[in-house]
Length: 482
Image (tube, rainbow, N blue to C red):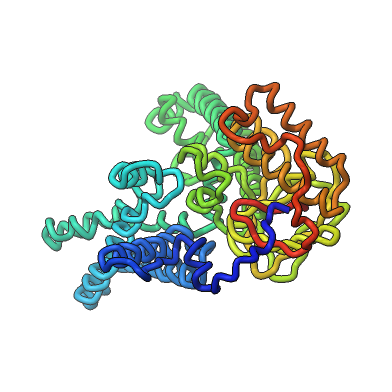
């Protein structure tokens, strides 16, 4: 099941936590300087969880997200209200004070995000300065930078000129994309259907050009000032195709009216095409995302922590989000396996025969049934409120084909789990053969684990001596079959 047995070590609980939890600073029996550095590191990890994990972290992280959301919405509303002369004159001092507070909050947020940037798994191998520079050029960081620019520019410009920054201040609205599944889903829907939308726009432009040319030929002698050129007629064609019809330019001849009616009817069908494409893609995306699958959330999964930032961004687009309440079943024995799961937040209970394991944040499960081409052998339920990231079987197979290092990690975990369950009587030896067959297939593609520098986890070995104990502890980055 990918979980270690109970350790007979009788070390007290707090001491064991210090041994295995990187976020717990062990400042006992250390010189004052080292103890202070440990506390500083622990504080930095805490800031990282609050800002970068957010709603997928803990309750405090959720409140940080909510407070920032309130500031974002409030500043956008107030920027709009500032353009009303009466409100600006009466509440000018209060509005300026609030703008200063908002700017200070966003500046603090931006600096803290830069400070903890080197804790992102893909950046941990870089020097702190390099990691922060890499982070600073990412899309979300650039939007954060735009959000704090008015705070600095406001000190450089006179009060009257400062109002010219209204547009820049309104760009803070795009910070919502970090927290909103709807905005993220809409962006993904448009990006995913960009080729279909591009083809639709080409068709619309072609029809508009033909309609403008036809109206130019029919009406140019009657209305030379309005339809005497094709560019003038294109304005009429655009207004008519979109069914807006401002009425500033209308055909007066019989042929022109017939052509106008035909263009109106074509407009209904033409603009329904891109609208339908976006609506369908958006509905599919929004139903697949109960929460925002962020770059940092994917990077925190041990299976992906060695990938480059761009590769993590690509994987995040493949993952669907699912939120489940405590006690709610996730998979059942006998179900067809169509996906594997990564735990973004919370914990799950895996039950397989006499074996029961608890998997927590960063673990994964469900891959064994997919790779073995069989139905689920285990039942999995949520131990508490849990957020899951789902990877479909087809995407998993393509990911393992494209990323040999991920394939090795998954197959090593499959082998370890299979041997453990075989020894405990929860799985038949044929499953062990399936795992070994998977390794042979990987070897044929020249992606096999390096057995010259380390033990081959797929080599036959005896069952673990402690496999009789049905109680298991969670293993970081591991999981169980479902």
